[in-house]
Image (cartoon, rainbow over all chains, first blue to last red; front, side):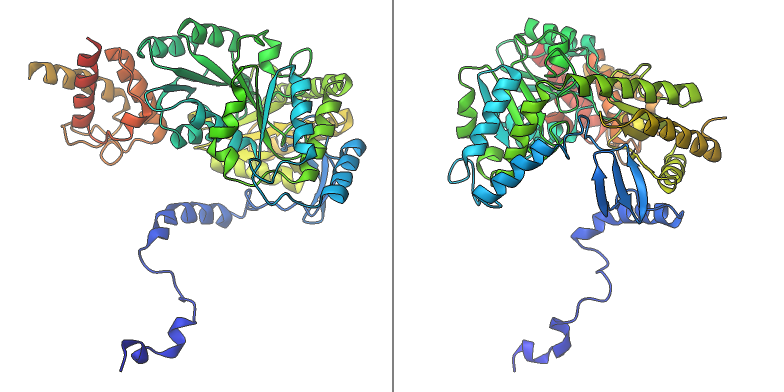
Length: 420
Length: 83
C-alpha cells in the first residue's frame, strides 16, 4: 500500500481552514494586525477606495456619493480631453487592444514612434525612450546607467522607484540629506575621483510638494564630474516657459543629462520615459532590462499620450489656472491654521501635516464622508515619520469647488480638533 | 587596539542621542534588535558617523552592518583606506 493511499481523500481538495502557524507569509503578520487596528477604529480602508464612476478629472462617485477628487495626479486635467480620447479610440480601432510583445521585438507600432517624437518635440531634445510605467523608467535608467564600481548618489527622500533602481543595479549607493546642497557636496567629495557617478534628483518631491534647489545641486554635481538625472514626474506641464519641469524653470537644460518622466500624471494615461541629448542615448534600448523584458504599452495608450503631450506644449491657460488653484487652496488652508508641507504654494501638491495616524484617519474619513477625496500618506513613504493628507490640484478644479474644499477642511479640522 | 577603542568611544558618543532606552553598549549590541532603531533613525545616525569620520558608508555596506562591532570594523577599514 502506498503512503498516498493512507491519506484521507478530502485533504488534497479542501483549503486549509486556518493559515499554518509559521510560513513565508508570517512576516506580514504585523502589517495585517496594523491594518486591522485601523479598520477596527471604524474608518473606511483608505487603501481600498473604489471609484464606481469617474465623471471628469475632478469628480467621481465613490460608494454612491459624488466626490471631489483632490488626491489624483491629474494636474493638467487631460483625461477627458476630446482630442485625447479620439486619438485613443482611433488607435484601438486601427491597431487593436495590445501589442503582445517587447519594444525590442514585435511591440513597436506606429504610435510608439509617434509618442517618442512628441516627447522630443516637447522637450526639444534629440533622444526619447518610452517605458511601460514611470516606475520602470527609473528602475531601468538608474540600474543601467550606473554599473559595478560606479556610484549612484541619491536624496534621502527619493521616490521608491529610485531606491528600487539602485537595488536592481550593481553600483554603490550613497545617500545625502534631503535637499541639502552642502551634504551632497561633502559626500561627492569623499568618493574616488576617477569613479563614474550619477546624481539622482527630483524636481518636486511628491510627499510634501517641496521643490529641489536644482541649480545649486547640479552645479555641485558638475564640480565633481558627476552626471545628473532629474525625475520631473510632478512638474511636467507647468514649470518653465515650455512646461518641461523644474529643471527648465531653473535654467538647467544644458546641464541635466537625463530627465525621467511619466504619462500617469500631467499626460493623463500610463507609461514612463527618459529624454536626453546624449549622442549615445539610443544604446539604453540595447542594455536596459526593464525596457527589453516586458510588453510595450497598448497602442491606444501611446496614442492618447502623444495627443496629450502635443496639447500640453501650448496649454498656457491650463498652466495659469493650475497655479491659481494651488495659490487658492494653499492660502485658504494656511489661513485656517493648518500646518502645511511648504511655506508657500511652490508646487501643485499641498500637504497637510498631522500628528498621528488616528488624527490623519479621522480627518480623512470626515472629508470622504463630506464628499472629498484626498491622499492619506504615512511612514515609511513620508519623510521624518509624518502623517499627511496630500491634496493635489488639477487645472480643471473650479474656484467654486476649491471654496467648498476649504470649507470641508475647516469643518473636519474643527471636528477632529486639528485646528482651533 | 587603542585606535579601535577610540573609534568605539566616538561611535558610542554618536549613539547616545539616539539611545532613548539607555542600552549598555558593547560590540555585540545590535541597532535594530537592542537599540530598536527604525530606518529613519539609522539613516540620521549613519549620516552623523560619516561626517564625524569623514567617510562614506554606502547603502550596500550598511546592509551588512548589524552590530556596533561591525560598524567599528567598517569605520576602521574605511578610514585607513582614505588615509
